[in-house]
Image 1 (cartoon, one colour):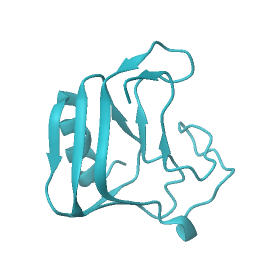
Image 2: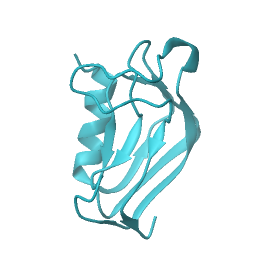
Image 3: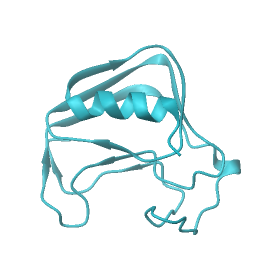
Length: 112
């Protein structure tokens, strides 16, 4: 079940545009998706943390594996805490992409 922080952050990303995440620590348990024409800015006091046993990428663009091309995505700042010791690389939880221990995955993007 998605954390309230995941739902909050994803709702901001779904709107696109210029997104500034307020200072704080946010815990997510699912992969956040970012779309075309989105500028995501986090302050140095902002931490996005992967919840224990989530075993997933933290952020990816919407066009993956040959499914179109994204344009004009910008990600800046913050701390992306993959919570490594509480994850299990090389596992595939039900309904999630294969997890390799990577926290950000971008492919098929122009103007990243």
